[in-house]
Image (cartoon, rainbow, N blue to C red):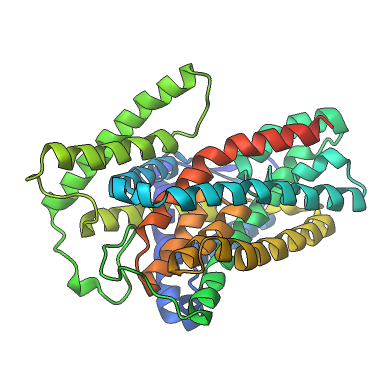
Length: 403
């Protein structure tokens, strides 16, 4: 296929908003989606992706979307997570952070063992196992594409890039669908509830309490947007410093860090200033940015990349999904204390282990909107999934590719 349809950035964002609203409407109309905590942008995004896939199939022309707005929504969202993070939360989250990091490293190793065994059973080179494992799942599309040339060079697998993208694509879909049901099972099975149910939500407003929130005005929204933009400007500067030090991180990580700094330093220096953290205005903006990012990400999934890779991908990913669900239910949840926060983190970890950090946050958001807040979960998981995991994943992948 050639001569693609090009969708400019403004139209991509517009379609993303429409897709999100479609998902939101379906979530409110279909009890199943609500009961099992399926994130709103996931429903609309998958429907749109199927529609665009049919357009490509019948016209013979792929659709190429500009993504600048999507990437802006991502950094705005993570800056908002940072602004909401209190130092007390970070201190309280120290132990869960360490435990989650250890569990993440264990997950990376087991994913790659499953990937290597599956690859060899289906006649693929052993090194291709990382593309059936952590490079494409915990790593996502970016990591899969980055490592595909190395896999192709050492194994002779010419379709390494296509394989990695296909596995990452299916993994993202599965990740968006399993987190909510897992949390529902754990919360209702163990009769769990938030320790501080009246605490403000980190992302979004609860489904049934919109009328009891503090008022949202154009002044409060402008104040929040100013803080977010300052955090992003600082994130760009910090990103340059980090890169000069020889460490490459996604832009949203330094924006998250700068958000944390601003969210804690400004109230200390100006105690009488109107609050930004844990306000309804910040919750709405963070929910909006996450929803828009995920709706655009999912509606632009290229299902045509799955063509011809069939049976091996579905069998191996079925094994990876069974492992992920069993791991968060019977290992992660008990290790993190069997409480409400552990159940929320289980939903997030399921989304992150098979998909991406935004998927994990969307899973946790859907759960906390229904059952109640868990602020520390929204600080701990992004720090692990967006920062530490890249280093650990690179070490394990490198060892297998060079074996």
